Amino acid sequence: MTATPASIDRHAPFDRVVLLAVPAVAYLVLIYALPVVWLLARSVLGPKGFTFAPLADFFADPFNWRVIGNTLKIASLVTLVCLVIGYPTAFALAWSRGWAQIVLLAAIILPLSVGVVVKAFAWQIVLRRDGILASGLMQLGLTSEPLRLLFTESGLVLGAANVFLPFMILPIYSVVKLLDTRLNDAGATLGAGPFYRFRRITLPLTLPGVVTGIAFVFSLSVSMFVIPSLLIGDRYQTLATLIGRSFLMMRNEQLGSTTATVLLVLAVSVVVSAAWIARRVGRSA
Amino acid sequence: MTGTERTATWTAWIIATMAVIFLMTPLVVTVAVSFGSSSVFTLPPPEWSTRWYARLPRTSGLLPSVMTSLQIAALSTLIALVLGALCAIALVRGRFPGREAIATFLVSPLMLPGLVIGIAMLQAFRELGLRDAWVSLLIAHVVIAMPYVVRTVLGALSLFDFSLIDAARTLGCSYPQALRKVMVPALAPAFLTSGMFAFLASMDNYPISIFFTDAWTKTLPIQMLQYVEESPDPTIAAISAGLILLAVVALVIGDRLVGLKRLADF
Image: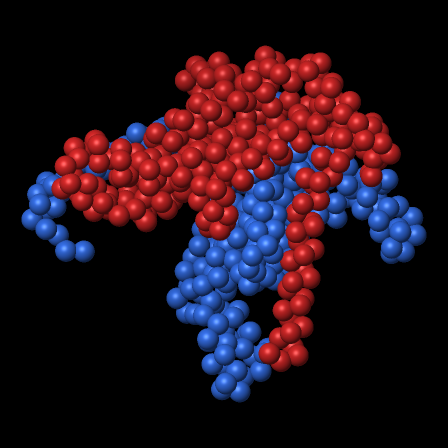
């Protein structure tokens, strides 16, 4: 951009437009960033200064390790299911025209604007022993008796994958729609087979979208609270439900704060490392 | 196209069709149950009826929670729109370091666990002596609405050609007139769309709101989850169907204003 004398004048000695950003940034710093930092600080600051005691206590308890294990297991499964369904769907969305495109877009965006309580409640109905899924599977002859799905890990994964699927499809779609189909044709002209072309052309070019999608779905599944509360119940704890329980039912704020710190560090490291990976694969592709 | 590619294309289409059915299942099931006569969620319903809708006005606690949610969502969206739009203008027009970082920061509440944000705010508000549930909810919900506003308005502003304002002034408009006649119409669709989705996000929020409700001030999702846990019956499906209708309306308006494809931009 070339700077005209007038614009240099307007931006000297300092850009006054920056002042417009102050209210929003100040609001978020005061109401959101400082409290979150303070929460983190409190988990390593005891009454007598710096201490790792609460965190050490947390990690000394085998129950908490099982909770962390549950959380990571469910989040990985949900991410896997979303990836398997979402990757091909993103391609279909990019190829689609006319009515097919409208239907696909509406089916992806509409559920995003419907609350999670509504969807989790609907999955409670679907997953019941006399619900449509169990009786449907029986009518197809796949199971001989009604399958127990509600309050199982499979039910939870299915419901959560349903809620988070758009967050996998949309980032992948945003890179697939930019794919230059001529690259694929060029590869074919040069004698590359379809598998080789997918591995060497399509997959590397879509990888940044895949990484973003995985980061979204994984961090959302690690943090979900309403869905496990309704679909698996109290006997199966994840980090988020443990936080909710310790604050809202057990009134154990120390445990809640420590668990919140662990969850926060987990979620942030997923997002940050995914951004780093996405930049790297984006550069090398 | 080789046979392998044709198979791959077909597979993608079949999976996409299944994905559409999968994504629509909870919405269709909710609406079907809400219009069924059965109280045990039998699907397909033995008979159609509107009895669950007729029960809505008599459901205790429902109307106050709807009113609370609407007030909080409308006000927090309004505040977020003003703050977010001003900030977006600064980020697009200004030349100062760290603009990218500020944009990421403003969108970051979307990426952190809601429960953790809620607890952090709860402890901070308590420390400051803020105990009023309604005010706490409002202050907290601005943070929920902000990312939606910033993301969409930032996108629209960076596409806006600011030399149009200079052109309008050359043609005799005053600066405020130029803003009103050129910039406002060009940005209105993005504004309305982002406001709408911020409103829905606030209406639907559970993990942050749960820390700021008391016996008298509950938002709709909190009240709904309480019904689900206490006495699940299709009345909840009827409320849900209302919320789904709201989302459909938002989608149609969003399509008219900016188009479905822009709504899918990530």
